[in-house]
Image: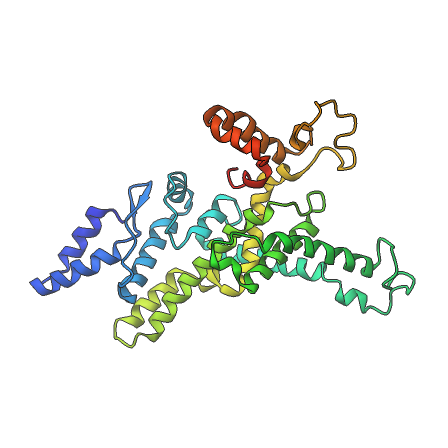
Length: 351
């Protein structure tokens, strides 16, 4: 498992002279950064100025410690439950395993990834209306911009445009304090994922707040891919004699397809879809938006959230403010009530 005692003893046995012992201990300090300590925590991350060889060895050792078992869940679940995956370079993989996007055995990951990525590519093509609008074999009465027929590609094209516009309005406000989410490319990626999800799951569609669930997933998937690329590029730029065997070990241990940057969007979609299997019901209303409030018997000047929406997300948010916040921080509760700040504005992140 790469425990401190066994790892230290093996390193010390390889040291000869006092100078080599000193060099080895310096390398140990950086290499021994993310290797598992017990079952619930990781050792401190390496220093920023650590050599690329040290970082690569650490990367391989961490991967083996976490994923070399036939069922890696027993290694990563305690880390996740104790909040110790924050600085881990394989955080997105752990999430996918725990959400059953990837199998628990790492030997099956590449096959599973190829399948999920192909599925996302298929969905993108399926919901792309440009080719359908150019199909001359379709009835002109249907395939024209004025058609309101359900099967009209033009009708769907306009609906898709409205949906993308609605999604983008939320996406551009995603975590404004984080520079990562302010680039056009990242915003387009988030819009694409949310759009495909909404078209693939019309019973849920797109609802405000989904972008805040998606954004951290994409950030972590992209970060893990960037970490892998940085280490590989660093080894390729290193002309020392030790770099080649370290690179070969990394290539043997971690399949490059697992952290392929060009599939970050597809990998995030599969992760988001799995997450929504659990939280999707939050966004489903049992009542039509046209019937909410009809026959409502509330008091005059009551708040909008006092009406029964049939939406689990709204009900949970109301419970946070009206029950939990009122009980534990009555002053803050009173302040929010006075300013008419409803829980839908701030509470999604709390869930």
